[in-house]
Length: 610
Image (cartoon, rainbow, N blue to C red; front, top):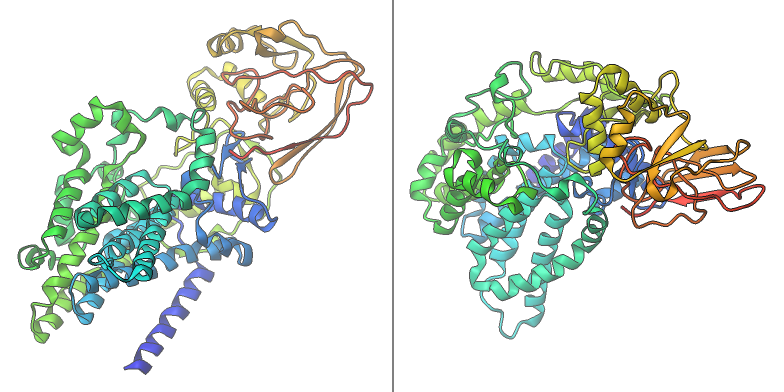
């Protein structure tokens, strides 16, 4: 038996290594957000720094401050020692493996036998939800961490009187599980885990509270980083009720849990009416039906019912009314994410049901369960060869827009391979491209950057060209990344800035808009920027001026004082999370006055930790 297990483990490890080297989890958020972000972050990690800032996305976006980047998650060390795409793939494979062990441990601690627990754990790792979650760098962590957290709470058992070391150990394991969930940074996962833990472990509320306090310490770097940008990013203002409820579990898909992907896979062409769903499939198997009635695990039945209630989202009258009436609930989105905890609870029920079967019936149910799951894995797994996504380095152009793709009309692998050729935001960052005037899918741009993107999309072509030139896009007449502003017009609000730009009388090459106190400031004709350079998270500028002058570059960074009081034109950010991408738009341009000297010193701006 031990030899057989060793051979099996070796085969699985070999398969995982081959997938990590030659494969690529390419689908949806992985392609458009997470993979390019991790490539960017890997360069910073290898330089011995913490990735605070992303230069490549719409003039700048926070990395550490964005919980979805998982900047403080433990497996980031892989990016220091391995090529980025291998480390990226291993993130998914490690968490699928951890999901198997965590689910097996959870089933064991709830009373299931080793064979039943292994059956349930394998079913869980092959489930439609687990496979679908490999399209999301952050959600795959929840597949592993929710059962881990529940196991930690269940395994704490009764009060360990006379065993202080054991009690401390249990608390630390629980705190570690909670802390990892917090570092994964997904609010719905945090909420669903908290609900599950309270249902399972309410008798140990004191111990759970201690573990939660320790977890807060573990998560504190992420909390602090987000707190620094919270007032500046659009996500902090919350989403609309429509956005929050957009990805809700379609009622007919509840049947999909039992009978299979009745609306197809997202990786296949067709079914455009169902494209808004989050998970490609939530299939588990028909074994769920007898498990619901015969498992006798009341707490997990309650968890399943509560998670299903919440996952229905807009199709649940109560949930919809709550979200529409309470704006404070709109900082999280997509109720379908509650289906992760729902699946965990259902799998625990399956483990209890398997223990009630004779050996012959276990074999029969194994065939009934795993054959359809295997078919779904083969058809729906969002993985491709890495070769089509291996792109050569390109000049650091700033791009405004890309060729549109009619998504959903062809198999996903063909569509995404074509998308590589168009370099959409922000995948092209892996090749060195910069993007401007795009919208953050995560709501992590500044409010001003959002306004800029909306104006670019809404204004006529002639006005749009002003915005694009101000952005420094790769086009004729684009402003340089750093320049001396000849003249300043003072404005009192963002609306006034927008009115100036769209008035038809504004010349971005001759003037800049700045806060009213700097109105009518004129730079010396001889003033000029002599050098501009970017590091991983720095901008270095040199300028010469015989008198005070304006030198715009980068963004205005609230709360951060310039050492040299120099005006900056929005480019890639030199400070924390900046309010805008460019000077004369709906961004706030802040003008600083150069020191009176015949030659300004070499200046280096360190990226603020936003």
